[in-house]
Image (cartoon, rainbow, N blue to C red; front, side, top):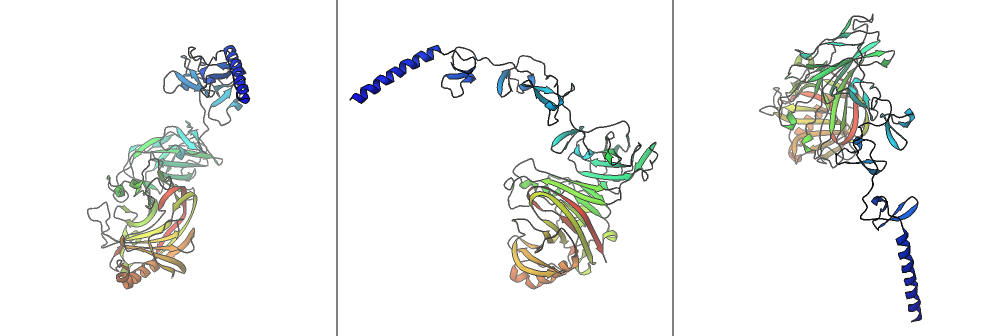
Amino acid sequence: MCITKVTTVALLVIGLLSSATVSALPVCALTNSDSDGDGYGWENNASCIVSTTTPEQKPTCSSNLSDPDGDGYGWENNKTCIVNNTPDTWPECQNANSDPDGDGFGWENNGTCTVGDSGPTYPACTSASADPDGDGYGWENNKTCRVQTTTGVTALSPSGLINTGTPTFQWTAIDADSYRIVVSDASGNGYTSEVDALSAGCQTGTGTCTHTPSLAYFDNHLSWVVQPVVNGNNAPLSNRLSITTPFSPDIQPILSNEGSCEAWASVAYDKFVVLNNSWNSRTMNKTGWSQKINVDEDINGVVRPTWTYDWLGRYDGGEIEVKAYPEILYGSKLGTHVSGTKAETGLPETVKDLPEFSVSYAYSETGAAERNVALESFFHDSCNIAGPCDDVDNRSYEMMIWVNNPTIRTPGKLALTGVSIDNQLWNVYIKPDSNKHYIAFTAQTPSTSGTLNWNRFVDWTQTWTEQNAQSLGIDVLSEDFCMGAIELGTELWWGAGSFTLDTFDVTRN
């Protein structure tokens, strides 16, 4: 009982002291001084009490730009501020070091400031391809850059509608070592062709220059610029001109709403076509994926196709489904992409009359993605090559050779291991439950370069399927089927990266 009485008295004393203390506390000037909502705040190094009758006093915003939604309140210095019809400008920074990331904005005297009096500044783009849509701004090294132009180089022709995919470009000369012609669409697909000043006929640094690249891009709404190279450095770009090339049924498939019949960007050269093949993008359940191709022709005439891609995460589309196959092809692919005549390529041709083909390749990659590096051929029931964009699709067999393999994915059901073909060991996959006219070889020792005797794989497939078709539940690769093209590309499931094809050569006997 005594213990209980003492406790009661102590509580009474504490209560009296607390009441006196509260009555002496000043009223808080800002309600956000009370972060936990208990009625007490902390201002000027002392406790204060929040008054429900005193309006919250917020500082005035230094700029209207702090209030993007126009509700009268902004956010500066990690707190709310009130827009008070101040000019939409920030003061000029007194020291350029206040802007360490070079975006044109700094921080001085606890406020935003701009470097210079002309607003944000951006570094100069080093390449015209950084600005595919031609708005004057590009993206390099993870930051915005500004495309610089100069009256020293003027793009003259062509412009507007032209009648060829390989036009002759003309521009004014300056004292440059070489010039780079950059042709692109709004998505960044296109090509770059470099020529030395002597070959372009402008070695004196005066007059005009001309160049006809061996590359062709058949598409609408293209544009081009000239970038001089002076003492090994990229000089400012010329003005940009728009061109529209003619429709080419041998390069570009028919426009359609079907995913497999989209008009993919297509760059052609020699006896090859590079395709931005995104045939199964409809399986993506998120937007924001990207894929583009570019073909570079250096000053020595060496051509290197490249493609970059970002197919997002593993579960941002059908996990088990290939999304795309950016590629290069030789021959006739599905009747809608043709890289040359039969006299030039030897294709299409029946299996029994197929010339001897040798395929050499070398490539490099960056990034992290679930992908393969695969060569393939489609075989048709006649040499009138047709595919999904035609009234009749006469594909009868598909043969793939994976020279580099994904981390997880496989081509189907494993049928054989350690098969020796063309002095290499391969695993053989089939799809008896879903695609009876499909076969794939995966390299037991993946490679980034090599040479394949194509006929060895065709002959092996023809013989093996004939012997085992019935027992395995698959179709036979008939000797009367007609091979349309030889292709090399990357089948992509997810992830981002880039692919550069340093060598791709097809020779025939």
